[in-house]
Image (cartoon, rainbow, N blue to C red; front, side, top):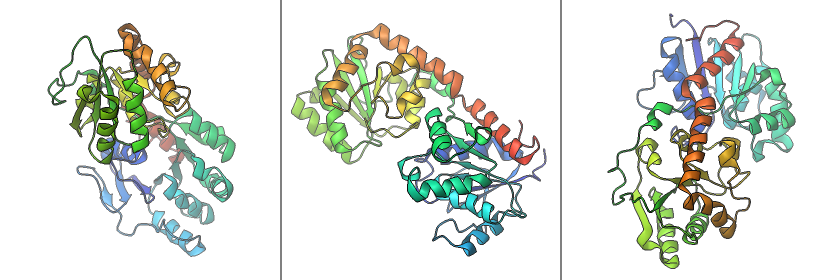
Length: 368
């Protein structure tokens, strides 16, 4: 197919490419659509190897509410066939199309409702703006329910497309030498924790909960930074410093995730965190707080095991069955893997996204 079709990708200010799930999604889309469309990105930089070009005159997405700014945004979007906007910071692009629809291409917005966008003026703003969107894409059923209830997005324009993962990469066992200083023993359960997204207080709680287990274990903590010191202090205080493994930062996730028996997550985990889907793809059971966002993704078998309370004893008691029962771990990991295959395959995510965009365009221009 020729690249006569032009796509414009818009992002609000915020997280870096490797930290924001919507930006990661966009990179996946750009990579697949490289031979199907000309792709222009309104951003400061592009990740290495992304087949797109930077916009020469990016729309002014940041700033005070202004008719003039909306007109400038709409003007910057014209000349493209479809606009894809990602994250809360890009909602002004949708409002600009509502204010200046003539000659402005269709826009598909991607955003999960969160507390900051579901109350007061932010909620009303989205109700008004999203009336001009050809579609809204969210990443989970819970997010879709919130968007329907609070933003009043009709079902025909609301699309739930979970994060896609290269499942084949997680099907391979990680290299045993990846985690330095750690050698698996059949008599021990390896409990993995990442420092990403966890406060010192949360990490201390996780360590204390693990220390109370009636099982032989190794606590494998992945990552560098300030949280590492908090983990070391807590482990020393609980007398389990000899069972602590600190290999530092390990990337990619496939290098280590399949090498732990249980993944223990911060209890204040944000909704639809990518590490949850990656653990599922690796066939690893997950322990987190019920209602934290993980349970909207996990297989029912794993969901039933989650901690009901964000407290040390509650977490320890929820983790105990997984720590002591290898059969339960295997069954839970298998169920997670099956769930990942059914809902999070990267190719399926791209195909569903392409169908949404084709509908917005009114032609199957992005079909593979």
